[in-house]
Length: 434
Image (cartoon, rainbow, N blue to C red; front, side):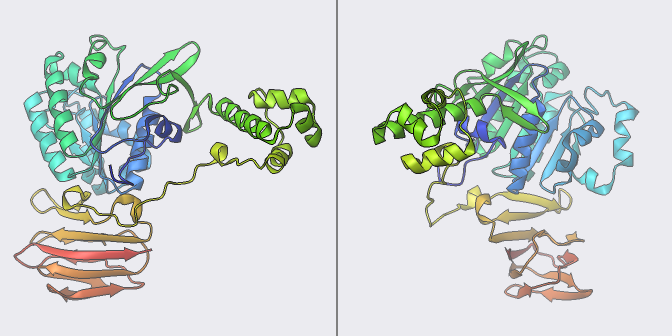
């Protein structure tokens, strides 16, 4: 795996437990009711969209109006699509749910894909095949949920077949997928265990009187620590998911560092306590992770024992190869506008973790396509080179014609319209500087 190609769950402590996610992994979430799976899903989508990754949420259980409330500003991302399997599925085509499509604005409708026959497995699969083709390589997906499929399709047979087929196909497309399964729903208790052998990662979320726990049941290709293999208690704090044992774990780790440094210096707990103005008992409790030293005493310990606190309070990023290659087949493709027949899309030429300074892309516009906005949201200097075909661009209320081999430089003005007036596909290399 090349550096920079790992994906984040959007939750730091979960990334540390798993060693992050790999492109093409199917992640099976067996989530009991009330375990706040929506926070894990939203964190994953936010992290992916921040990297300009194409994302799709396939909803069997909630209407578009409800999903808009749940997802909030995520639905405004040009890289996001909501696949609505509810309105014509469990929603029974009720006008209450269907009226979303009459009242929604144009931007909302562009980011919601209504599946006409979700109750028929073959029709659903055909529709999903079209969506995955548009999403391209490296997209991320959330399927909510496997139980919803089962209710629509009347049993587990079709659900198993689709899950097996989609896991393989999306893995080949290097798409990372969250599959949500509710093991405490009737008829679903046996599905999670049987699906684990197809998934690369399996995570259990459980709820009890003592709180919520997360356990990594399976994670292929990783040497998991013993900590990852046991249930980890977590809680919801505001809009964040926090590991309950975080503070205790840090105290234990810090205590071990203090003890190791003290023994290396060859001084006793009483002698270190005297240097800090505390008792030997206080030092003993600190070394065993039972109490936290004051910030002032912690700095004195670091100075007296020449102690490096970085392993506790921060980790240096590993060095990366200065030469990074992105193969054509691994490019992230984003659909930005157009119909199915005249799709305008962008291919990114750098891995998403490298675009903080330079963002080179190739924009493809089919014949007759029009875009009443600029395809780049970055603010700064921009440069374009027409690789094929003809384009028209409107900048500062003036229309300019560009042909193959022509280039354009923009410093302050932003194009308000693009179009392909020709009979051939047009491509432009576009580079944005921050």
